[in-house]
Length: 95
Image 1: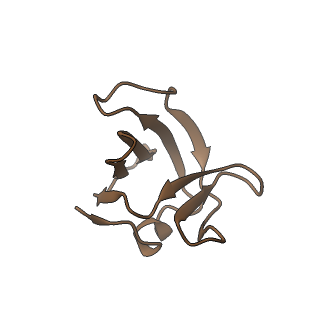
Image 2: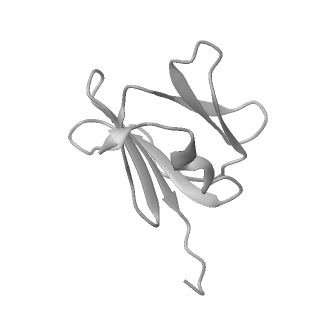
Image 3: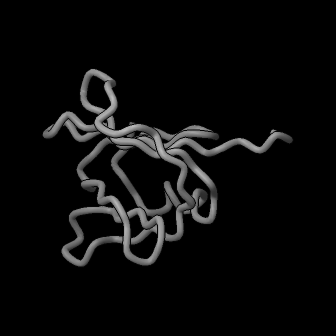
């Protein structure tokens, strides 16, 4: 695992994905929902990474989180809150 960085998510911009926030025992806080990631940028105070689903709606992931990434999934775990942020690429039928 590594700390969050902006480049770790750039490959998901413009991709359809399923996103969720899970608690520390892996239970859903909210169901996975299909979204298209529009942009990824730092928040003004440089403490969180904002993942936008349109020009107004986003979730903010603390930069202190540990990040893991593979071909089809990006996740970040916040040890302080016990929350895990998960983005799963929606695979094409041709994948």
